[in-house]
Amino acid sequence: MSLDNPEPDGLDHRDLNRDLQVFATNPLIGSGLPLWLPAGAAIRDELQRLAKDIARADGCVDVHSPVLAKPELFERSGHLAKFADDMFPVMDVGEDGLVLRPANCPHHALIYASTQRSYRELPLRLNELAPMFRAERSGVLSGLSRVRQINLDDTHVFCRPDQVAEEVARALHSAIRAQLTLGLRIDYVRLSVRDDGPGWLGAAEQWAAAEEALRGAADEVLPQEGLALEVGVGEAAFYGPKLDLQVRDGRGHEESIATVQLDFTLPERFDLAYADTDGSQRRVVMIHRGTVGSMERVVAALLEHHQGRLPFWLAPVHLAVLPLGPDQDGAARDLADRARATGLRVRIDHEGTLGSRIRTSRKRRDALFGVIGPDEQSAGAVQVNDVVRGVQRQVGVDELVVRMREAHQSRSAVPVWSG
Ligand SMILES: [Zn+2]
Image (cartoon, rainbow, N blue to C red; front, side, top):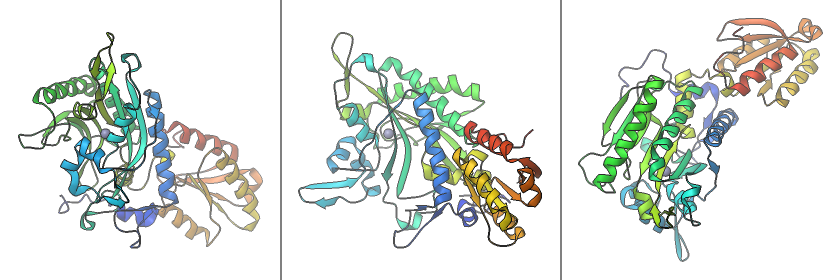
């Protein structure tokens, strides 16, 4: 906790939310269950698209699984023994009890187990943007950073032992790429290992082998990225060690934003195997990997890191169009329609004086606002303002749409008006 030493310009995401209107809460719904408002949904949709693009580039396939399961599933996985306090109680529905899942891994393990697997089809990489649940006490819940439903970009790789090093390196590369695309600075990568305490599943040799594999991948990948490795004792997952990408927020709090975890335990518990070259059944290795991370955490981190001024492609509003008077409404609509047709997020603000509309747009952290007066209207142009860059210029509608579209689709960190 570093509340005693906040950075001077480090507004918390809950403070920024007052202006940006990303999420709302309501006592009828309860704490830790945020409603994603249109601005938040816009950011989240971009993040989900990024997550899917990375997953597909890495050879993942999409799956979907239910948020509920019988408690027996989590007895088998070990979650009930380890996490019962963080799980919602079992719902009584006739003969079967059902429980909200505390993690997606067991469902994915059973997708792997749904058919016979051969060494030839591995690695199998399953990706799902999947919700999981934590029965946190209301006192600890906060904005988007501590919630009861976590929507996670979650991938599970099932591979042979000889494929582990390559898969871990691939996962680590992609997690780093994702964070760089988001404009988030990774402070360091943590190798999270177990301590001497009880509660860690699996044999000592497995932990040692897993740790060695993670360290090997980190030693290979991190120097290329200029990142350092630190060791976090006692920070491992209960089933195995992991690599965590660590970021510090505006107030100096530290979060794990993406992760690569090696797991020999769940494959044992669910008897996950494949037929090897000689036909014998061999134990598969499971890798849990996240690239973009949880939607809630990453949005909180993005808002705080960028202080609400997100990179263009992530901005909830790419362009606010401000017609000077009713005569310019037609031109404003034409521009908005053309831009929206290319996937850009555009709003038209009519109400109030031009000055008040500009103030509102700035407060909302719209990426750009564009004024259309009589001169612009007759020239087929817009007076475009990029508040952050201090750019103000008249731009043809065609050029504006092309530039914005390019900035959006490339997910570039370069501003629309860099040149
Ligand atoms: Zn997992």
